Amino acid sequence: MEILQDKPLAMSNDYEQYKQVVQSRWKKGQLDIIVTTKAFGMGVNKSDVRHTLHVGMPGSMEAFYQEAGRAGRDRCPSHCHMLFRAETDEAEQIWLKLQSNLTPEAVEKRTIFGR
Image 1 (spheres, rainbow, N blue to C red):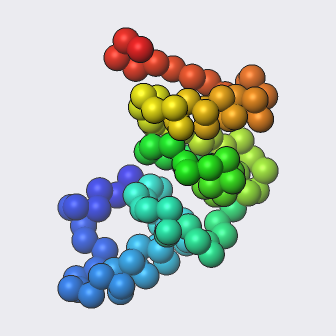
Image 2: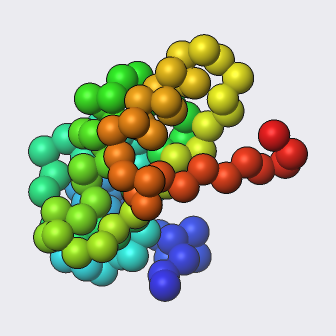
């Protein structure tokens, strides 16, 4: 796997150009992992995404399905990972909806650091 900080993708101060280079290389399968905001995926249709990682709860069930739907578009096994702190009523409600809308096999809840 290529370590990006060791090998810059673009020698440019133009951030838009840099983003285009990253997106192009990712779409061609030249990059295994990219870290982006959810705005990156808007309009991107790449079928062989195997994992999505979500930091924080989505704003709604619809947002969750939209974000999680970036993985597995080719119908091969894929995973959606979500990291969040369930300390708010909103997070708890979204988690309960996720559990009720997905099969038990599809939902795996692990408590990290004792909760």
